[in-house]
Amino acid sequence: MKSFFSLVYLLLVLAFFSHITWAVKGNSLCKQTGMGEIRPHSVTITEFGAVGDGVTLNTKAFQNAIFYLNSFADKGGAKLFVPAGRWLTGSFDLISHLTLWLDKDAIILGSMNSDDWPVVDPLPSYGRGRELPGGRHRSLIYGRNLTDVIITGDNGTFDGQGSVWWNWFRSKTLNYTRPHLVELMNSTGVVISNLTFLNSPFWTIHPVYCSHVIVQDVTILAPLDSPNTDGIDPDSSDDVCIEDCYISTGDDLISIKSGWDEYGISFARPSRNIIIRRLTGHNQNGSGIAIGSEMSGGVSEVYAENIYFFNSSTGIILKTARGRGGYVRNIYISNVTLVGVDTAIFFNSNFSQHPDEFYDPNSLPVIERITFKDVIGDNIKVAGLLKGIEGDSFRHICLLNITLDVTTKSPWNCSNIQGYSSLVSPEICEPLKESIYPKHYSDCYLLPNHLRSSGNQNKGSWLFSS
Image (cartoon, rainbow, N blue to C red; front, side, top):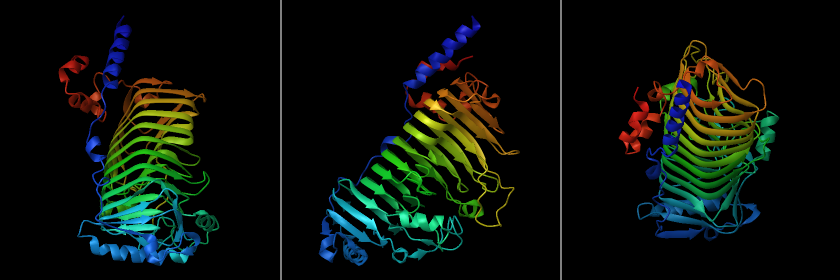
């Protein structure tokens, strides 16, 4: 009889929570404030001599157009219109109070000559290029210290033509780290929407040291075997909203970062307040959502919901290592559907790449308060590989209402972690077997907040009375 009432109790708790959606700044953070704004000044790239034949190099035309539009930055801003055509270009800078608008059949093509992608200094939170010591090639679309930048259109396309870069990478003939397709640094008020991004040489969209970033309604594609072609990588950035995106690439669809080892620790700019919702995609060699492995500046307050990944290597992954330092805390991931995924949830603590020999191997990451709720999966090979670091603290890992159809005999492999679970199938590993309810729900990130945000505390209070 006691077990019957325990089951009823858990079902009531689950039913109560299923009607509550987290509300932490979601609506305001993801609201576009500038898309409806009409820029008082507008020019077309052809006015500056650009030719959309896919052969003529138009770098100077883009640079000259933006130089001209900069005179309107304090007069309400300006819009650069790119009409239908194939517009070959090298790297160019954006400016503040600018809308870069691509028409429906407009394609901006990245030059396949590395000289058209200048080499710039490494990021201070990385200390060197991510792939090679020294500098790195600048992204195709680049900007720094900007305010109010909109990159949008009628589903126009950016094509990085990355195959030449992938071949150079594989043959180890690069002198500098490959470029991203879009990178904005130290910028605020960034909107990227209604576009398609193809074949990035390296990571596709990389906001770094940015605040108030919205990425909405974008499609990101690269061959499944293309190296390190991450989709969207918020890096030491805060107040980021990513929603309604489809991503299929050769690596992580989304990877949240914050600097690398001692350089990230010293720079000390975390990634925080990041919302991901209505994300669909797949990959062959990466994950759907990743945190790390470069997370030395800290990652916190990440909220992901309504996620669908299929035919992929890994669903959700946390990547870290000895020497990373930093922290990952207050992560909430819910309403996830996985189909044909090798590993549903993965904590990988063995990412051994380091920028140099000066990292501190005794600098251990703090991993705590990570909640997975409402995850279903079909044709999953492994439910979870949850491996912490011996002597470190991976704690308050919570799994609630997880149902995975697993094809292997050992669905969970856990070590050096601590946490709680309720309503998990197949049966969870020993370190997480202790029930969330009634004693530990407050240890699980956001579950108490559900009660407070519901506006009906009395309704749920009886569920947690002993």
